[in-house]
Image 1: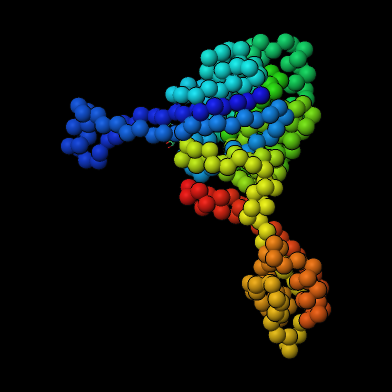
Image 2: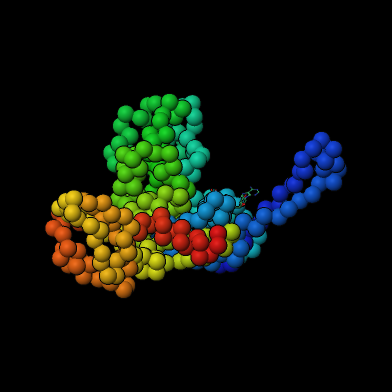
Length: 327
Ligand SMILES: Nc1ncnc2c1ncn2[C@@H]1O[C@H](COP(=O)(O)OP(=O)(O)OP(=O)(O)O)[C@@H](O)[C@H]1O
């Protein structure tokens, strides 16, 4: 449904040296550097997938989203989404996609939210019945009831973001591009936005491409990860595969009935991270040692009161991936 083949995009950026004399010189002799934002990007995404598009700052994520939404024309390569080439057949194409740029608003700042929605209804030529149905559903699921009559500039970030997401879905698109949709949101709003994304994916089959620096977004939503670094696609796989590659390590924390005589617990196959008379923390490579064996050896040495086993956070797995690819 989404297919990119060898997409490349570079930007020519004027270079200005520091200092007055250099600045004057650059008025006549303008030097340019070329930034290769995307280099030969190829991937495809199936209908109904939620894909996390991740990478460090300046990796090329927003540029990719702009190409896929038809805002930018690439230098080379082809892109087909729902049978359209986004930048060529924009008018027909935009009816099938919704786009949210977390850092930018598509709502008119000084007018009530509902007026922006009405304008979008006219722009997308949404039939009145469909508009009413979609608006009712979005108002209910995104809890917009009290916000529709408020001018956008008076909304909090979280409230605005819920309105932005609703605005991008009023015309019932089947593909949704979300560029950092949870940036700056508090924990409650973040959960609400994630919940909503999952619901429209499950119930309406909307395909979602999500860029984010928040790895808990990825963990909560994405079945698959595309990692981009310095304009190149570096990894395409599931979170589970990534865990399998880097994530055999577990942290085991045990609380036990200690006492003044209790010395450090020593367990073969478990590396001690920290120790106190009541609590010990170990690192265990489950590829080499079974957690059950560690716990059984520990219980021979002390009366265990509580045990917590944690996998490596996704954040750390991603950092390892960045490190492996030197980005
Ligand atoms: N309009 C532009 N003109 C010149 N250079 C640009 C332009 N847009 C992007 N770039 C450059 O292209 C590269 C990729 O930028 P892009 O915004 O796609 O990165 P990103 O992965 O979205 O980063 P971030 O996580 O910081 O938002 C960067 O080096 C950026 O400076």
